[in-house]
Length: 428
Ligand code: PMP
Image (cartoon, rainbow, N blue to C red; front, side, top):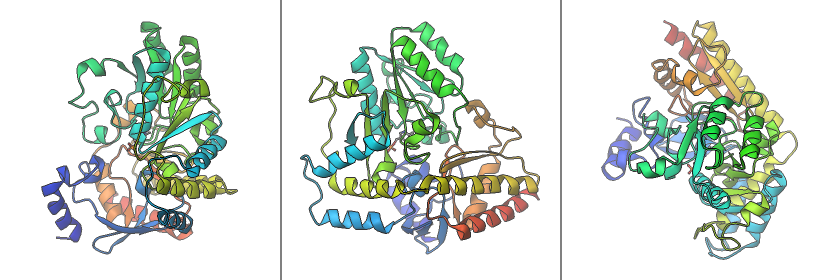
C-alpha cells in the first residue's frame, strides 16, 4: 500500500468518494488518486515522495508553473494586511482595470470565487436583461455545476457517465436547450423553434471539457450572427481559455466579440477566483445598479486578487504566449509521432497552452460524437503507463492537457521519451 492508497481509503470514510471534486477520484482510469504534498515549477510531488511532470496545472491556472516566486511573494505580502474585509479595496479596482485592458469586450467586470459562480451569474443576468427564460448550450461543454448548466455537460459529469444530474427538476432543465458543438445548423434549428425565448448562447470557445475541440472556421462568428439576429446574448465561457489561449482569451485569438465573458481559475493564479463581465449596459443590470441580484461575501478577496494580478502581470510580458504555444505544439505533435511510430492511431488538437490526445483513426476530431467514439480501453492503459513513468496527465479522456511556462526542454524531452516507452508496451 502506498501512502496515497492509505490516504484514499481514509478519505473515503469522511469525504464522499474520498475527493472534493469528482474527476480527482480516478474513477475512469482506476487506482488511487495521487495525494499531492507540494508542487514547484513543472513538477508535483505526491505523499510517497514521487515527482511527476505535471500537465494538469491545477486544471489550468498554473500557466507560469507551480509556486511561482512572483505570485508567492504577492500572496505573502497581502497576507500581512489581513485575509478578508468584505469591503471594497483598491486591489479590486486594479484587477477590474487589468481584466478590461486584456479583454476589451469586457467593459465592466464583477469578481466571484469560482467558475461555477461566474457562469451561473452571467446566465441569470442574461435572462434578466432579455426577459427570456431559455438558454442554449452545447453537448459536452461544461460550465460548472449550476442547475441550468448541468444538462448534457462535459468534464466530470461526462467522465462519470452522468452528463445530466439527478437533483435538477425537469421544470428547470427544460429551459436549457442543447445544440451540437461546431454545428451551426443545430443552433439555427433551435432558434427557429424558439425565436423569442432564448436569452443567450453559452459556449466554450475551445471546448476543453470533452477533451480539446477547437471551433471550426466560422463557428464562433456564426453564433455571433445568430445572437444578433434573434436578440440573444452571446456568453463566451473563458474559465479555461481566458489567458491560456492568448493574452486576450480565445475571443481575441479567434476575433469574436461576445456580450458577456466568464473567467475563472486562471485569473486567480491558483486561488479560488472567477469573474464575469461584458457590455456596460448589460452589466449595469446587476445589483446594486440594476435589478438582477448577485453577491458574494468573499468576492474580490485581497489574497486572491494579489495572486491573480501577479500572474496577469507576468503573462503580459513579451513572448509568453508564443513560447507557450510552441511548447504545446511540440508536446502534442510529439505524442502523435510516438503513438504512430508504434502503430497506434492518434489524433491531436492544440491551441495556445492546451492540447488533446484522441485514440482514434479519425484524421481530425471536431465533434462531441467523434470524441465519444474514441477507443475507450486504450486511455486508462496509457494513463497509468505515463503515471508510472512520472508524467501526470488529467485522469480522464475527456479533459484537455495544459502546458506551463515552467515546462522546459528537459521536461518535454522526458515526457516524450516516456510516451515512446509506454506506446511501445501498448503496441505489444
Ligand atoms: N467553465 C469552464 C469552461 C470550466 O472548464 C469550468 C471548470 N473546469 C467551469 C466553468 C467551472 O469552474 P469551477 O470548477 O471553478 O466552478
